[in-house]
Image (tube, rainbow, N blue to C red; front, side):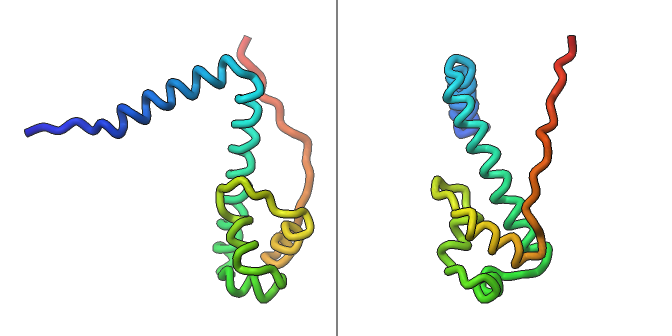
Length: 109
């Protein structure tokens, strides 16, 4: 007997509702985009650490940060790391923090 995956239907409905909310509420859209940017940075930090074959335990030894702090830096949650801890983390994996101008997207006219 054929089956229907209702999970994808529910997710599609939730995505449509979220899209509607973001279109109607500029502040919600801004908050959502900020969260997405933060999640991207956290994933990139964890990927960079793993690329250098550095475990969280090794990172703990290099930085003096606790395992809990390192985990919080890498996980998508609402706890933001302090700038001091972020710098320790980045330096310990052989990277540096830099700022660069934001690239603007041009819409087709």
